[in-house]
Every structure is written in structure tokens, then in C-alpha cells.
Length: 239
Image 1 (cartoon, rainbow, N blue to C red):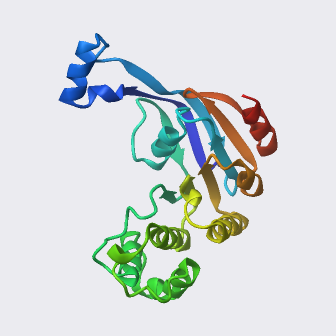
Image 2: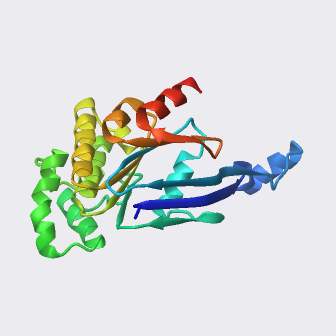
């Protein structure tokens, strides 16, 4: 049984100018089609094996983030289906789940509780989260005083220490300094070795070779190819 099964997924969006009254008026003045749509995903089908590292690659506008959001349940496809066999942890915006008025340690406890962890389990992983984020000296300080890098470190650390079967990563490893990025990639490799399924959407191709076994290449919402990671990266770079 695969960890993820995506079958014939389609997603349509209206053009951005259709979202506001001002945008609609400008479109009318330019004689543009108000109800014009574009196909973000066009009959996308693929599967990810349990314990596999899988990359979704493509240029801006290829549909990568839309596909990621469909898999994670943030948005729903217009047609097709997504089947997940296991619990899932989507890493989209690392600081999104942090409350600015709570301290770092309070945010850890709150987020862990939201994901259903019991008090004893939270106490067990709390020091590991703090140590990985390298925030020992600031963990009692309210989040509103953290830099964006500190928030990202804390958010990532919380996410990867909560027990889950499938981890979805959308460009979040692009944040932080060089050393912390390397630390994040090494953690991904460690989790994969533990049997976790890792799906990554990224423009940073070199690290994908370390983590991923296979890749899907998207272009304008359509699957161009699926295959071994090095072959797919080579194909993408020639596109």
C-alpha cells in the first residue's frame, strides 16, 4: 500500500483580477474576460511509496504549490482524488502556527497539544525541540520579539518532532542561515531512514538528491515525467 495516491486531479482558478471590485473594473476597461480561468492542475496522477523521498519540481507557475495544498488538504481538487495512508504533517509556513503573545515554550506546548500529544509526551520531546531550534536563551521570551529566522527554527523544530507518517515540505527549508539549512536537510534524511515518507516541493535541486528517490516534473499543471531523482533533475534543467 502506497503512502500517497493522487488520481486524475484537476484544479481550476479564476484569474487574480477577478477577486476585487477594483480588479473587475480595470479588467472591464481593458476589455479583459472577467470570468477567465486557468488550469492549475491538469489530470495529475502519481503515487508515493511508504518510506520514500519524493520531489515535486517545476518552474514558477507549474502548479507545485497548488498540488502540495491539495495533498495536504488545504484546498480541494475540482476533480480526481487524493488518498493518504497515514498521518500527515504539512510544513508550509513555519511561523503560521505560532502565537505572537506566547513565549517559545508556551507555543511548543500549545502546538503539541493541538496535534493531540499527551502531557507526558510533550514533556519528553520539549527539550529536544528547544535544543534543535537553538533557542535555549530565548525560549521564555514572547514570540513577538523573535526574528523571522528564530520563528522559522522553532516552527520547523516543533513540526519534525511530532510523530507522523508523512511529512510534506513546501520550500520552507529555504529559510535560515546556511548551517541551519544543512541541519534541516540532515533531519529530513534522518526521518526518512526512520521510515517516514517525505514529499518536498523545492527550487533548491542539489539537496533533493540527498533526500529523494524519485521526482515528478510539472509544467503548466501537467505531469511531464516521473522517474529517478537524478534523471528528473537533469531533464528539468534542460527544459
